[in-house]
Image (tube, rainbow, N blue to C red; front, side, top):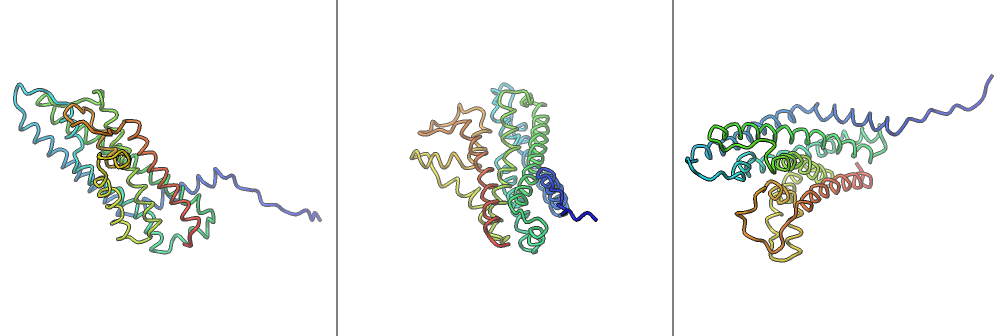
Length: 275
């Protein structure tokens, strides 16, 4: 009889992570309220943006100078961006808080002790879904509003100067806000507290940092909300000069920094705290 010890065949890390991604993808869409919330948000954002475009079309006069920035402003209004911020941050919070609230996270960590891999997979799936959602919403809103304005020769095409940046900034705004909400959920593990914290961090905090001093301007420019507003402001001709103006690379860096920091902090905290 062969008494040689048997050694289990190790699984490849990439394969295991692939399975984690598949599991998190299924888990994400198994929550019916996610699809409902995203669908209702789409309708709300489109309604707000189309209303703004209709107002612009109704109040335009023959001979008025064409203002491309006004067309961009109707493509995705401040109200639309606020709705997108609140909902995507809320969805991100729900992804993390719901598992802690139900205790499902303990079962997950028993099945997969590699907590960092689990949290990374959650963040990757969340970012992928929200990026797709942001791209769909930004593209659909841009197409509908500019088609409405085209009847008055006020619309823009996707090839217009600044349009690709406008669409990219709006599309990527969704995953950035979602990852911040996800991180706050991991930190606080309480639904109501996470929602309040998300509003304070993403919505209220940016207004507290003015352009008066270099450091306050730097912090303010680094906020996702302010970065989105700057990136979607294609024409700065009618803006008052700032003491410490933001830059396009700096705004993109703010997006990347918040996304990476939120993901990294979520992974680090989950690995060091009890479930």
